[in-house]
Length: 71
Image 1 (cartoon, helix red, strand yellow):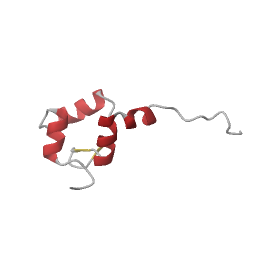
Image 2: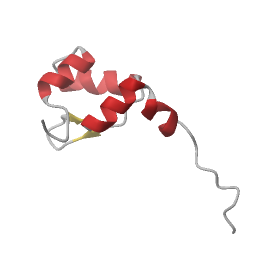
Image 3: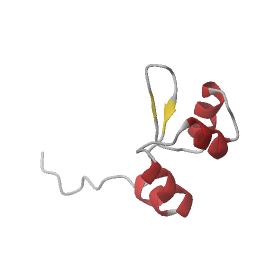
């Protein structure tokens, strides 16, 4: 098992085999991912596990608190 989801896992997660459809699915659901030079979406295995368990979404959706930053 690697650091990132493999093509079979990505298809299982999104329900799509094509990169374009997978990217749209990920964007529509607010997943954090990168697109590599071959236009393949890359999702961290750890992030995916956290996201599906409900842990990652709450952390990523919060804005940093800049109220204490001095100008």
